[in-house]
Amino acid sequence: MALGVLGGALLLVGLIGLRVIARRSVSLRVLREIAAGCNPRPLFDEAIAARVPELFAFGLAWERRGCVEVTPFGRRVARATRWMRAIAGVRR
Amino acid sequence: MSNLLVLAAFALAAWTSQLAMGGRKVQNCLAPVAAIHLALLFAVLTAFPVGNSGELGGALLFWNGAGLNWFVVRSHLESSILLAMLLEISDRAISREGLIEIAHTVHPFDRRLQELRDAGLLRDGDGAPRLTRRGRVVLVVFDWLGAGRA
Image 1 (cartoon, rainbow over the protein chains, first blue to last red):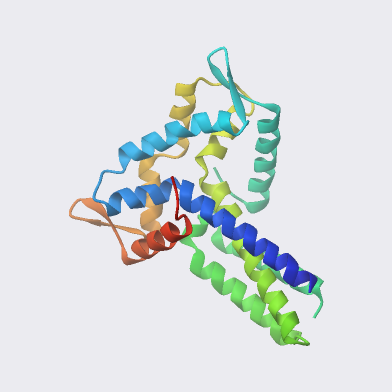
Image 2: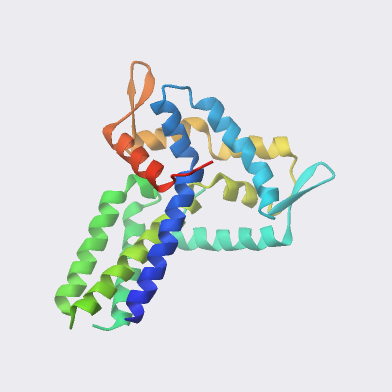
């Protein structure tokens, strides 16, 4: 019973994660552009540039003296990301 | 069948999948990963038959939920440009332009296209990339999942 409840919760979180991927993934946007017969390069460049304001919007970074700096919250997220990458064996 | 056994078996499946992937991206290894998970799940269910259908349902629900989360987190850790940028600025301040340049170096466009080819989602045709059948299916599924996107 407990495992079923935990599984249901995990399934729900996983589906939300998939939806986030569906809405934000650069690779999927590239695929959509190619499917539409367009050159995906400008969209790719635009998507990368759009990530910088997102760092500010999510509270992960701020801009000081013309430079992008990590916030304390961003530093914690970065540390957690490094740990998770190491555990998952993800290379850069 | 104890809950702990299912948890341990899933952890073993995740760890074995990681070894089988050997540094490749999860989108390029979905078939072997699914095979590993199915084999371990089948082995556990065979060795320790479940008492009732509720217990079996719980085990299957957990395995699917945990597997889906594993895929989502792993995919994000591998491909997120936002996280790559965050890691770059975590120990030094960089200008906007410099950060964008670094992101292009860490996640170059050509490599992204190659990864999509390796995953069987793109093929080269008439000098330009074209979607494969699998690519079209993936796009339809994710368009449905992300329905209502801005």
